[in-house]
Every structure is written in structure tokens, then in C-alpha cells.
Image (cartoon, rainbow, N blue to C red; front, side, top):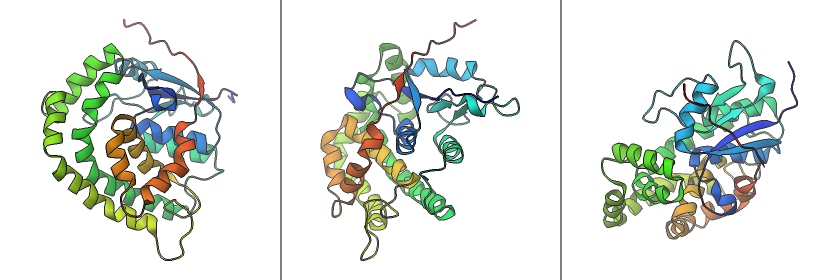
Length: 270
């Protein structure tokens, strides 16, 4: 049955001011897609401890990954289906982005079709090579900006994932900063080269003047860094000839746009 309800977007809570409240590199990908496509949406900011009840209430299966219950999640009642999800709920960044592209095809987040998708796969793989540095540097700074319930969960889960208490992980990362920065510089070089393009390339995006998913994936990571370590962010956007900085500045409106706030109440546990 058709519905006029807007897309509802679940994001992670923080106490950061203004648009910086949205901080997760995974949820920011979908925020950017929603804003770029000018899709009307409502939003709820959740504690980490609310994600499992959300999954249960929406009949979403857990992930087969290190973190079993994660955001982003959207509800799009217009796509509710007994054979898929009766609530119209979808999880994970890429399936959500492709779903929104199908329902709201203009402007496209895959401006060159299959070639844009292939570019996304390549950029995502290159980003995987950089993530190890950020995992040690940034998550220890997150815990002080989320709600008390979320802090307990985040500290426990990330301590297990990173192999030690978060303050110690951060301290060791700073001691190894030169090594980590060399990793960031080295593995960022191919991304800068693609952004730079051949002589005569116009526009700050990977494909020139039209943004796409590859751009949103990368700037969401840079926004994550910017929220918690502005000094490191400044070094990143200064790499190359400023390609990352121009990409980020051009993408900022889509990272910062907000939906209409809507409270979500976690179902009572049985």
C-alpha cells in the first residue's frame, strides 16, 4: 500500500554541537545521499544500546561481523513488503544507498552507471588500507561524546576489538604517530591521484563536476576525523595539492543537512 510517510533515518547520538552531532562514518554516508537527493526525511539519534532493540522491533537480522548491531538503518514504508521487510526497514550503508537510488533516481549518485559503481568498489578498497590508522587514533576520542549507556557499551566493545583499554590505545597511537601518518600518506596517494585526474579535469569530485557514492564514502571518513581530531583533519586536507580539502568543502552541505527530528522510543524488553 502506498504511503506518503517520509524516509526515517536512524543515526548515532553524540553531544557534539550543530551538524557535527552526526559523526559516524557509516551513517554520514546515508545522510549525504539523503541530502544530495533532496529526499524529505525524519531522523532519530540513538544510543548504541538502542540498536539491538531497534533491529528486533524491525525484524532485521543481526550482522555477521565484529559488531552485530549497527547503524545506519532506514525505514521507508513505501517499500514495505511481506517478502522482504514488512516495516520497510533496510540496514547497512550500501544497500540503503542503492535502494534510495532506485526510488529517487535523480540526481543520481552513480552518475556514470556501472563505471561509478566500479569506482566506488575501488575507492572503498583503498579506504580499507587507511582505516587501521584511524581505528587507533579516533575511537578513543569518541567515548567522551556519547551518552552514558552508550559509553559503557562503546568502551567494552572497542576495547575488545582494539585489544586494550581505549586511553592506552590512544596513547600508543600517539607514540606511533609518525608511523601511522606515513601509512595515511602512502595509502592516500592513489585516492589523491584519482581525484586529481588527468590534465584538464574539472570539478572537485572523483568524476569531475558530479558527485557520487565514491565521494560520499570518502568524505564521510574525513568528517569522522574532523569531528574528533581537527589537527589530524587539517593535515589530511593538506595532502597533495589540496584535493581532499576541495572535495570536503564541496560536499559539506550534504554532510551537514538535517532531517526533521522524531523521537524513537525503544520497545520495552520482554
